[in-house]
Length: 369
Image (cartoon, rainbow, N blue to C red):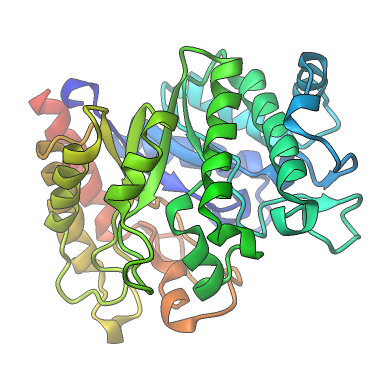
């Protein structure tokens, strides 16, 4: 790859959304296939999420503050084999063996990602609005330190939270977050600072990134992603941007618009590296202009144009999506109609033309390097 540029995939879902047409496959089967496909396509990096609620299904000590977290507590958490580490351990080992760099997301808090309080049957999620600000930050600090400690010998690049600058609008308009605290900028800044501190405490040389949402403007003037980059610059080593110029309508396949966002991000990054953390093009529904050929055009323009504009990495969203096999989010159907169709595979398991287009782009960039 050109100048060791990271080219790979984002995957923000659970393992059962990988190759869902394969009934009876275990998570490890799905991880093996994903790693194999990434190697075949020429990718060298993967940005999965480590879900807090998978590692720790229930928080049984909810009244913990940051200052209460001790090194022994972190060690106990990181080495507790009763927690849900198993599939993530396998993922980390499989990627290390395949020389695919992991760029995991830690601490993301969409409502379906966080633990329950007390017991998985309680029905009460461990949210900042239910646990309280200080107790939420305390458990988040412990969890993030535990994750980084467990994998720091094989992972040197972390993303903290997910599109936090659009958390309030995500809560209100698509309801992927719950609670009023996601509109509180003081709290959001505390989350960024807490997660940055957690990563650096456990791995001082590790790089910390965040993905700034650059599209969502349901309420004009509420936020501007350039301002948000400046606001949280001290909490990141890498400025990540998420850009979906074709999110609603796919007739134009505007891949080069992603590159223009890279140029804008470099202007406000303070000299820090810029990466595309999420960008993609779904292939359905067709009545909104999406198509498999539109995905090809997008891939052929967006990736190389973004790298030429100065991006030091590009994570396509995503390699595999459910494509009709799994029930996805409920809510705004106009937005969510496209969610199962981002991937490079059809619902029957056959590869879309975008798979070959992505492989060709990786091959050209590798040859240029």
